[in-house]
Image 1: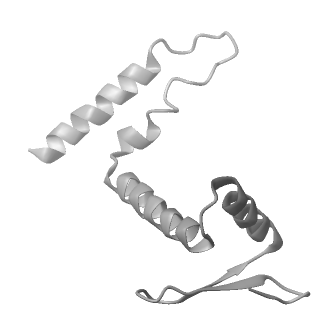
Image 2: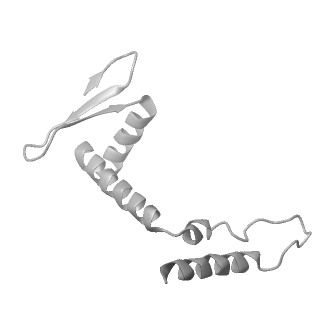
Image 3: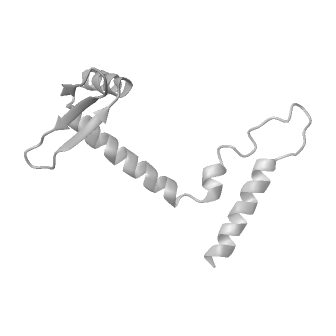
Length: 106
């Protein structure tokens, strides 16, 4: 590890069978990496490898999600302040998204 007092920490991770990766970390990222290393008892390299795999899997899942899937957690979740502006809006909008998806897949 190289620490430049005016800038981020630099980690060069070596693995005899794999490529070498140098990662620049700010103070917060370094602290999080150190805390995770101590808590889990695994190498810095293993933490980074796991993070890359998780990030790749998550981004793949998100790119395969439909608009309805991405919006589902938010639809019908907001309160109009007791005005009851719409009933079951989430179900209605979700159904519209599903119908559009079916039409596109034909």
